[in-house]
Image 1 (cartoon, rainbow, N blue to C red):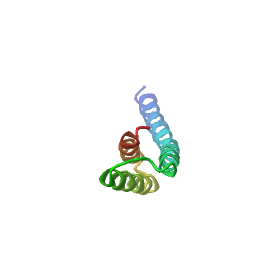
Image 2 (cartoon, rainbow, N blue to C red; image 1 turned 90 degrees about the horizontal axis):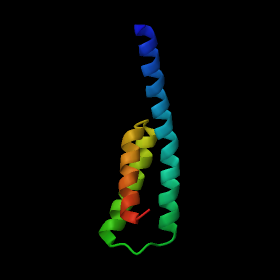
Image 3 (cartoon, helix red, strand yellow; image 1 turned 60 degrees about the vertical axis):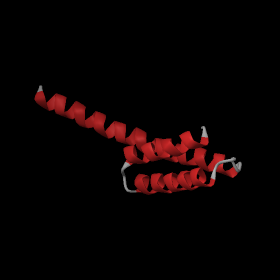
Image 4 (cartoon, one colour; image 1 turned 135 degrees about the vertical axis):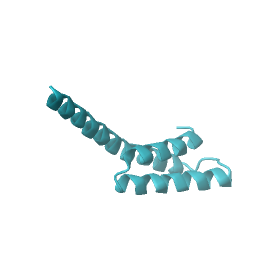
Length: 81
């Protein structure tokens, strides 16, 4: 019984990591699309979005998908998407 529970927990952990991994590229594309439309943002907000977008990509490539999703969500919020 313990083995089944452990197996189920491991499977869920891997599946959730995969979901976050697949979410990152979609968020990056949405941010890129919004930036391509030249949004009217204060210079500080634009710098923050650019930094968060770059951080999100770096975190995604490093396998830190939850952190990447969090950074990209902050950028999306600033952009209003």
